[in-house]
Amino acid sequence: MANKAVIGLGFGDEGKGLFTDYLCSQSINPLVIRFSGGQQAGHTVVSNGIRHVFSNFGAGTLRGAPSYFSKCCTINPVGIVNELSILLDKGINPLLFIDADCAVTTPYDIGYNQANNKHGSCGVGVGATINREEHYYSLTFGDLFYPWVLENKLKLIKDFYTDYAELDISNFLECCNIITHSVHIEKTHGIPKNNYNHIFEGSQGLLLDKNIGFFPHVTRANTGTHNILPLLGHDALSVYLITRAYQTRHGAGPLSNETIPHNISKNPHETNIANPYQGELRTALLDVSLLEYAINKDDYIRTATNKYLVITCLDHIQNEYRFTYQNAIVYSKNQAEFISKIASILNIHNIYISASDDSNNIHSFSG
Image 1 (cartoon, rainbow, N blue to C red):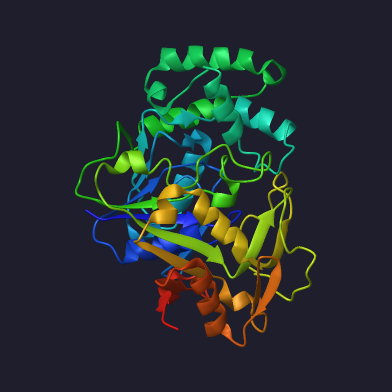
Image 2: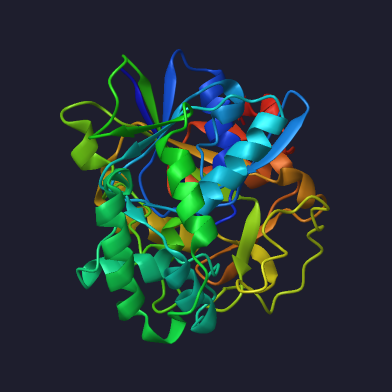
């Protein structure tokens, strides 16, 4: 059994979905495991002429890989039903395993989140759901299969959110009923067993990890290996660390190098730029010191011998082969030198590169 983890090194939007799709294309019997975050992920995949942004299903779905949301994730029944309908319309028949202990996002969580967004949240209720769970007002996926339990827990959650008590939850209840009867969705207790090769798909980047990033501009999740390691037992893990060839950040929060002029081109197909709650997409030269910082903050990644560097969006920085390290600009004469210098600083010599939204164009790099 192989275990591979796709982890973003930045503030998100690194290309985790792209590379998850690639790993699925190279694997036998893959299972994509979401181990952090929830429905706020927006992972774009282009495969065989189909383009899809995954939030509620794993990014290997277009390759026929089933998905598993572990108990460390949140789920949104409305989002699942909507995305399932879109996938079916595209001719995709997905299979989604959901752990019975996954926290369920309600309309009350979303209403509160959107009315109290101060730090660049996506506005889909993930942080509010986790906060509510920590206050013991719990609703999990397994509860949806017991109507009386669901009804009464929703009443208590409604009381928890007194200012949002008048929200209409009829569509939410209908979606709960749909997913508990859907042939495309199965309840599990732990990782499903079928000799799967596991591909762990990260949600947000390490610089948004609640213990690594810059509070309060973080996600309420562990985005590194913290949630993966308990699921492995004694099995080995290969780690694929993803970064764009430049920095991005949505909305509020620190972003280094933002005052340095650049001519990084905009992606006309950029995902996650229309969310009114998250804020605008900001770009800057790559800061390799921050990549190094993120790696060193995760003990497993820092000491791992079986790790890979993946650099995406190289097509956006033509004639812009610069990055910073320790507050100094490092210049490169071409793309190969740019990649080699980054890999040398990070001391990672197994490298993949991408200059396309299509994972079929990913290839290994040898400088």
